[in-house]
Image 1 (cartoon, rainbow, N blue to C red):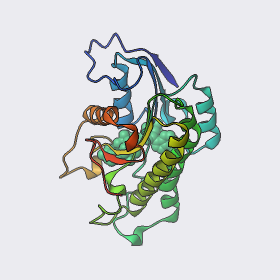
Image 2 (tube, rainbow, N blue to C red):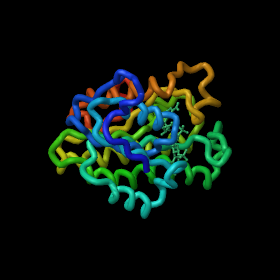
Image 3 (cartoon, rainbow, N blue to C red):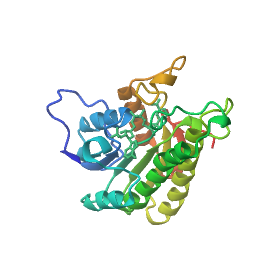
Image 4 (cartoon, helix red, strand yellow):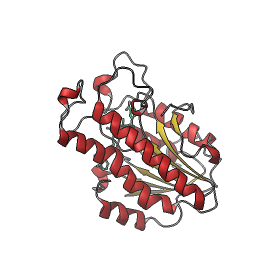
Length: 247
Ligand SMILES: NC(=O)c1ccc[n+]([C@@H]2O[C@H](COP(=O)([O-])OP(=O)(O)OC[C@H]3O[C@@H](n4cnc5c(N)ncnc54)[C@H](OP(=O)(O)O)[C@@H]3O)[C@@H](O)[C@H]2O)c1
């Protein structure tokens, strides 16, 4: 776990983005901090002059595996104080070298199970153990990185059946959790968000012909959208620009 207290004064950057909708000195947790989007989110948050504490968690650097409930529970318990901003930036598209399916003939139950474990069940465990740490009455944001291809209505070309369906499951988990949470945490915004097609190892083999953005631009887009969310939008499935995506 890496903890940063306050903005990175050594970066020499004027903050690109400041989360004014959260309280001054807000406390943020990014899970999947080693990933392309996750590390860019952390770099951007570290430059926010309003940041109080940033906790970065990752499998690569901390051995934090979101699919282990005991680890998720332990990490959540170790966070001191309320979490004003929670971002789960984990995800997998290629499982142990197996590329996403082009046809239902390629479905492999072990690969499919791993997709669901990483993309849906792991984030569900994060929701179970970390959402209760959002402040009861103050504004807070919890964002789970999803993917537009998880949209059922938007699916026009097929393929990627395991990834698509695991992200659709994630969307339902986020929506369900948001409904429960708003009864006890009326100002919390819990959303699934598509970061765009981002230049990271996850998408590199598939991004040809698509408009792509750098991880830093994706981080700015995602954080800008989270900043503008209001509590009525909790439970939404959004794109990086704030537009709603059909379920
Ligand atoms: N890149 C895109 O174009 C794109 C498009 C749509 C949606 N998304 C979504 O955006 C999110 C971030 O993607 P990315 O492009 O940043 O991917 P990435 O660079 O491959 O990063 C994936 C992250 O997930 C972590 N992770 C995977 N399994 C984990 C586990 N069991 N426990 C803990 N951490 C785990 C990885 O951790 P370690 O490296 O530490 O093992 C890494 O930090 C994903 O949910 C992805 O589906 C990305």
